[in-house]
Image (cartoon, rainbow over all chains, first blue to last red; front, side, top):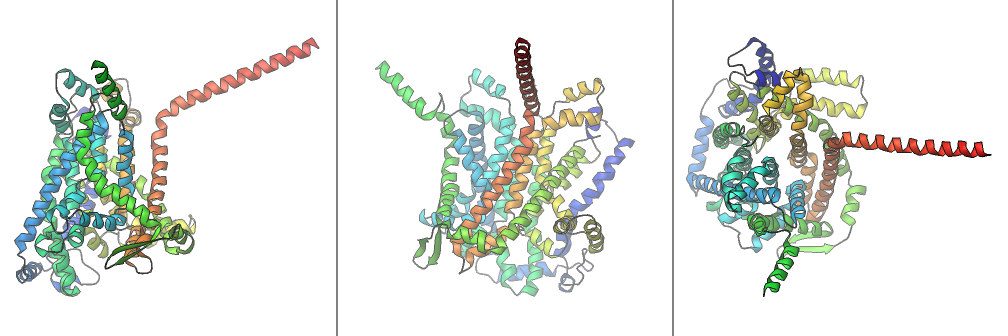
Length: 289
Length: 327
């Protein structure tokens, strides 16, 4: 039935689409639940947070959690804005470098012919399958030995090359027809020109996907702050949020955690909604028939 | 001079493959450096540590080579590991197909020209950003990811009436985690949608003109066209499940890492074992989803073989008959 809709391309609402809505709307409701829950949870006053059985919707919404959060940050030595700046700076750097490096690598691995191609691909796959937690200690040693301890670089470099990103991007570059690249070569484009004016525009949707994934990884990352950074001024917002909710006593911490979760969550949603339209709109053009 | 140049070229091409591929290395360079320092080297160190007893002291890390003791302990003495690994296996077997098929169905539905499909699409992808990070733990802790418990009791009873004991719990657990499973499928839906939009509409139209129904079009055109993404999605789902923080094995590993009695060496050998199991599962997925492309050729080969065998047998019989006739 899906294909039928695709084929006939009805311009307006039709009766036979009702069955699709009948499936989609219930699932949509399920999908929306966590977001509704997060928002509700943040506005719950203390007694509702611990109500048993737990309630899904807030009955007496209040801003107490947020006020507490603000007063808690006011008493700390490093200003709130510093953490926020660190987070934004690190996230922007990681996203930029990752997209550049992984698209370049994906292009080379998928469309160029050279020795050691197989080994390099396998290397990426191994990196993908291995349990990331087990690499923490060796990674710490390497960061320490390279003298990156306690700098912004320690936030950025260890997570710039994400094997999942390369896997996704490579799959999409594989989908770009080789004829297009050949045509570009015949027209006199060098490898770099081909990369910037053919590969990059065509894999934009995949880049958007990877950047959404990457953003999650970086924005929510508390690991680099807790392991590689000692000075408070270099730590990220996510880490700060975590300490807030775990350091203060657990009962009051619940409320703070709920409010912090909402604050952490908002940039995710904003980025997601803006990126998502791009994912959809650039997807259709493959450029060759 | 000229000879020299061609010789140089020959050597170069022997070392680095076919022509013009300096560019490939230039493109790959930043990535290679990154992966060498932060993925490959830690991996190598983790292999080394898995054969050691690692003690973290004030002067740094002290390793004592103990050979295969860690591995032996994991398989022979540690009850938790095998138990968690088994439950992980069952989880993978049940959840990977569900997630991939659900994502495919959702993508097919979202690919139609609906009113408000933009909103639907956004909402379907939203869980991607919820599931990652600290939020999911809190949600799970509050029980927001499960269906109401009264239903679950009934489900469990129904299942246990016709299934063996050891399967009942994972399957009823599946029902209680149904919402969570649906949330895990955001990225998969995106990838399916991307590939679905690349399918040539002319082909579908041609099939339609030849009288194919929507059902036939799905099986004969859509499904073969998206096979590579099905494989990719299955792999992605497997890796995600294997590394997610909700996985018992991962918790076991990170707990062992900090325990004084176990230590990092033990944890890293456990991680290696886990990766090995994931790799085996991955191989299975590849076999299941990739091998089918050659099914037709295989059949042809089989038929040819069979024909040859029959031919040989016939000839033998003929020879026998001739011998008998001669006698």
